[in-house]
Amino acid sequence: MRRIIGFIFHKNFEKSFSKLSADVKRAFVERKNLLQIDPDHPLLNDHALHGTWNDFRSINVSGDVRAIYRMEGFIAVFREIGTHSQLYK
Image (cartoon, rainbow, N blue to C red; front, top):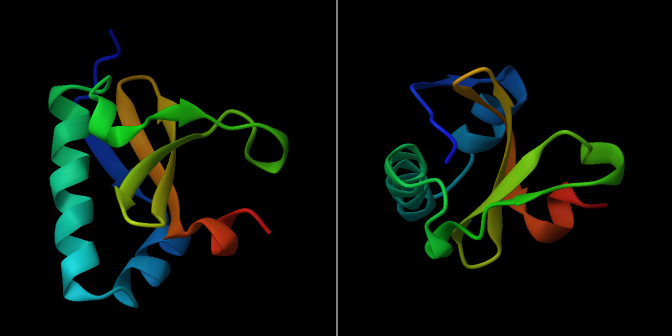
């Protein structure tokens, strides 16, 4: 089982996050906390990405919103957040 002891938020993530609705922001915080407690929880649909996002992972936030992150040791570094179509152009 993966272990996550902390989080870092890339400037691209912070910029996109600031534009989200309050409901989606709350959902992200809930999913981020769940990721730390149980990275394999089915609600997250956590999976590895390929192509442009090779070495990154994606979790479901709400509806069509996904958060993309990469593990650096025991730290999850969130790089982007947005809808499926925004992230996978």
